[in-house]
Image (cartoon, rainbow, N blue to C red; front, side):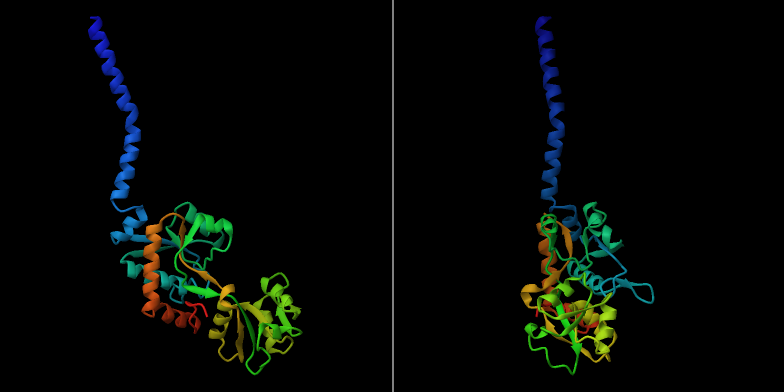
Length: 278
């Protein structure tokens, strides 16, 4: 009897130990299965021709907006659709406000963001990855076409610059010792330049290109462009760590650059090629 009892206790101990180990084994098995099946869920969807979910604003022309028919379009949107075509997947856009964009990415409401995002802060760089840039921008000087005083940035000294006092461009004008004429925003600044109440204004290259495309008869042109070292690139942004997906996005973007798709879309929305640094 005593031997039988000891055997029963031993069997129970083995059974309990096995039960206690099963969650760890299940977790290890799942991790192994995930790795064996091709990586992350997003990578598997891309490899299997599934659907990627992309967050975008939908109210930020000409990057992401609705046209007269109600269709979601814009440079960022059409670039993303072209990337999806290269990857052989479908794309669904989830529209959200800018302030909630990265929070939605954190919460996995979508897989990536297409909304002119540049990772310029240490906090963002630590948390997110950006695929190869599809647009580049920096400060430019806008002035009348017949004004030939803009041989260099140093030539801005003493000239009148229409700028918002709280903007980076106002600070840049002051750095080059221009006389700053205070304005509320870009629209007012351009009006002062056209009225000869200011010599020039500075703003983001993409914003100025958008204006010039909409108003080709404005008799204004870009005189100076920020050097390459001061330009920032925007691209598809996703949570850091999915290197295999990032590599596929980079490969697709490189192919779109090589076959002229990015240049074509740039010309369509901006009248200039914004996909390359110049």
